[in-house]
Length: 135
Image: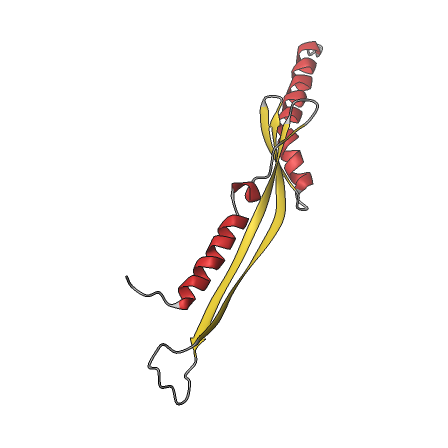
């Protein structure tokens, strides 16, 4: 059986803790159903930082010949930032971002409807327009 260095235990503990904190539900939140039947899923950005380190101390006048004393530590940090909502319902799927560009994204979403309505209005005018008078 091979001996493991104490830093391996520190890193293993920190990685297991990170694994327990971050799962798919951290990035895609729990879905919420609205009264009209739409389902809203929050979407988040996750950032993780991790560090581990240690050292072995040399003891003066050591007579036992054993391993040097070890001192170390590890740490991790996590940042969770909501970025959008995924809306599923009424025969469509839409991504609604939280940042300042929501107005532009909304305009892009409704542009096809506006174009269809304009085309319908223009086609209606062409059909009812009077015939040109010839001389």
